[in-house]
Image (tube, rainbow, N blue to C red; front, side):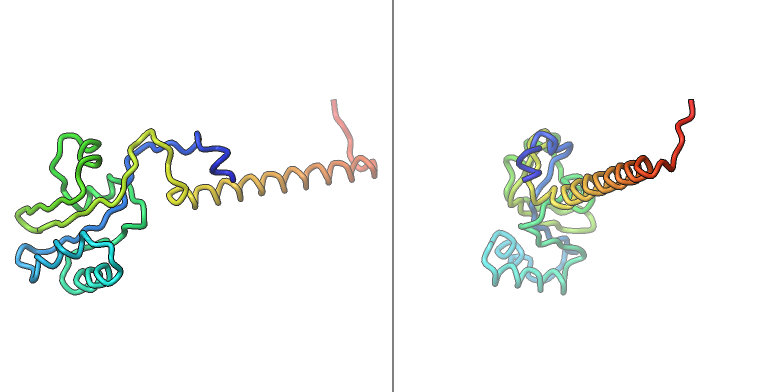
Length: 160
């Protein structure tokens, strides 16, 4: 309810993506399997890709359900593009190789900056906001209750 009421407060300052990626050494075994599995959404294929990643990958993230900052992805996958907004909008599958590694990437979903952030990305932030509001309400109530009690007992002085 808080999210729905305050959506304007949840504008993205950066691009976010749901991705899966696998980073391997250039001579990693069975790379053709990565190409097949990383594009699939079937549970068995996702599990097989997880197993491949744990055995052969230098690093991997199989996270089609989790939002991450695009800049965090760039720390792991050196995407060659002059326009990242356009890259995010037009690329579903990306594969590249540099002198040390080979990268396989699938973009499952994206949101660009200035758009409304998805509630799943803001969940923890919203919890913090609500808890902070409740804490302030409790402190104010405590303050008012103490003030009313002091007034009723005449146990304070006003200095001018």
